[in-house]
Length: 326
Image (cartoon, rainbow, N blue to C red; front, top):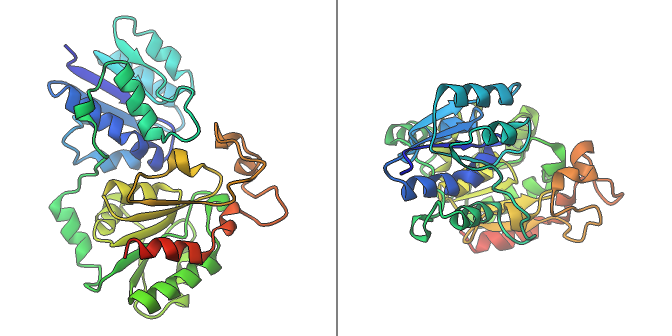
């Protein structure tokens, strides 16, 4: 009987962890007698602290993932180890646990139109580690205290729309002029109250809020749990393919996600969320591994047409998606 499970998710991003969340929660539901620990990075790991499926969260050092995994394996014994991670010699470390059931690669030869989360679940089912009955959409759990603390800083007006201009890489950002056009249209057509989370580029956030009417506001940068709690009250989130979009979707908040380098049919969210892809015919696109594309390393589009293929997504296309949600 499986009584202790270690799930290793060290791909690096908040979105990566949340894409693995259906697999994590399905494993816990399939083995309710087991203690399931998740080994991942901060700050994403803190999003799981209220999750009843997770017994413990182990935070890895980003600069020494191999050493962290080695220390955990030396300190504790497990009946099952599942990992999404293939770098830093981590699969070899896991393979040394010869008396332990292991699944070291949840991302095996996926077809181009299969979502990452679905691929993880399919492999775990093929390994007889989860049951079909255990599979459900990912859910982020927040305490009521966290939600109420965030609520007092949000307006009572509806609809409440979060616009997220920031992304970790410039190549994944939708142009500011498009956000401004979208925000103004949301305010004029729906009387939407716009909230813009402060990201890595404060000037970008301030510029967007200043371009909208006075009901728009900045959500200050701070605790990730606090941001998630605020997002839980939203009627709609519009964001690039970044951690905030994945948080919103896991909170069951209607989400429109704008994709550029990454492929929307792999990294997008299931309906009723909507995924919009920039320039689907890009000759540089590598659906199998977008990190091998020229734009990923240069953080600029190699084509002369634009700086990022998200420019191929017009505000009118986003507004058409909005009409399905508001």
